[in-house]
Amino acid sequence: MTDIKTGVNPLFLREEELRQGIELLFFAYRDFTSEPDAMLEQYRFGRAHHRVIYFVGRHPGITVSELLGILRITKQSLSRVLGQLVREGFITQRTGARDRRQRLLELTEKGIELERLLTEKQRARIAQAYREAGAEAVEGFRKVMLGMIDEQDRDRFPAGSPLAPPRRRP
Amino acid sequence: MTDIKTGVNPLFLREEELRQGIELLFFAYRDFTSEPDAMLEQYRFGRAHHRVIYFVGRHPGITVSELLGILRITKQSLSRVLGQLVREGFITQRTGARDRRQRLLELTEKGIELERLLTEKQRARIAQAYREAGAEAVEGFRKVMLGMIDEQDRDRFPAGSPLAPPRRRP
DNA sequence: TTTTTATGTCAGTCATATTGACTTATATGC
DNA sequence: GCATATAAGTCAATATGACTGACATAAAAA
Image 1 (cartoon, each protein chain N blue to C red):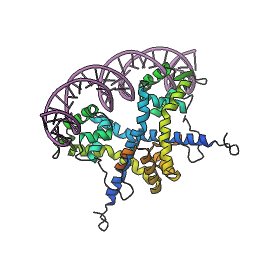
Image 2: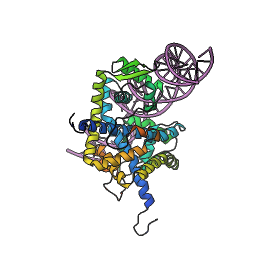
Image 3: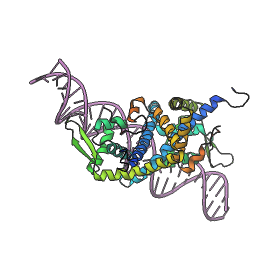
Image 4: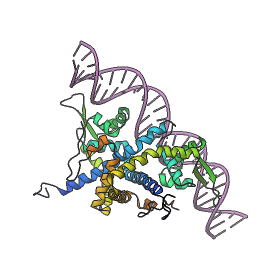
């Protein structure tokens, strides 16, 4: 034992603390995604569809490559999901004005409705957790979460309150 | 606008705050899993294998049904992954002493080694985020994350420091 | 004009997960 | 002791999410 007097090994404590962090992430993400996942089944969609709908809703006019950069999947993977959403009338594509190679993506009314429906439960879960934890804890949560995100994506999150609209990096 | 003087709509702020929470979870989880995922490829394993190895390592002697309860997948799904890990010598099964129907799972030396290798990067990521954010922020992070986890699983996380070992609920 | 970029597509493969049906062994309640 | 419930495992079929690799088209940029 490192610390004979207290019988507590600080290395063990640290290990335990970090493992707790790993598990908090696992359980929170598991529960965070379970409700939308269940709803998506009725549309014969999966979690990938939700992600596409979410980020297109969040960044109207987003291009395919920007979306690929956020999701970090291949265009072949995105293609099937996006194609379904376009064919079934949840997302529209329009040719870019400046760059006519681009397909600018937007939610249709139907897409907005589905996005709202899916994300509602997640917003409620977060709102409840924030409310129970208090403003100070939320600040800590933000700090830690941001620190776990790859540096290149941290500037998607505006520094402090007041909250600015999210940036869609170049 | 609700608040004419400041030009700030508190409902918008709240919406923005919650969406930021959604995105923090998405990006953090995406990056949190990417390193182990890349390593697992060399073993022709996937994320599911990591989860099994992790929780068996965390709870030596865990039963199949307890593991199913944590992962929230079907036994058919677990079966393939667990079977591979047993066949390839990462996990051992032994018959329960009290209840001989149970298969108690444990990591082999090889399994412990792989677990360490995979989880190392995740621990490092969390350690760095904790260090940068500070102890107070970590407390807030814990509070918020715990609030997002389904109530039935919250007691896996001991209340305050000092940290007690995790409980494998009955 | 050549090259690069943005997007899309075809084909094949693998991993994760599901539902449903069924089996075996063992524990437990009456 | 017998009926029932539980723990675990298996077979089969299917959906979803992801990948690599190769190739095509259109448009921008050098």
